[in-house]
Length: 209
Ligand SMILES: [Zn+2]
Image (cartoon, rainbow, N blue to C red; front, side):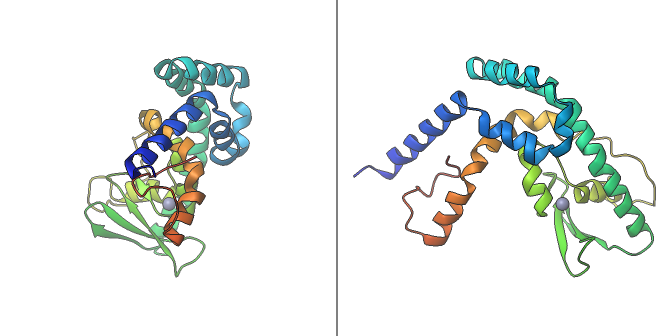
């Protein structure tokens, strides 16, 4: 019987090998989930070349992916930002509540369900809404993060002003999130482990293919 640590190392090894050999799942995630229709503006050949390069030289591959993906990330984020501005108008009119919970945590009322709310953390730029769970692996943010940042940009509630947030959330983080993105496909298996408790996936593993 293998030791827990050995099994964990085996998972790590398999995951790393698979990541280096086969980028297709991650590519599919970026095109279908993260960017949707906007993915049509990605130069496909350059994208494929970057993925091929990643297989032999991770650093150079990531750098090329930045360049290839930046226009589509910016375009997608512009759409999200315009949604955030609509939320801001509702907030400004007193139709949407946004509350400071302290420590960078902001509670944002849901636009579609007034009884629901989402929690944004401005320090980590994370939100617990479903959209953020989908796009975070591409280093992108949701409208709640933009909105919370707009209102509490200096850590204090601002007067109504529509200054576009000056942070660009994603490219700086892409080199780290791009690896997480690939491994996110194991989330179903992991949730099974959480539910059943007797899975053979070691508890120390936070991702698996
Ligand atoms: Zn959100």
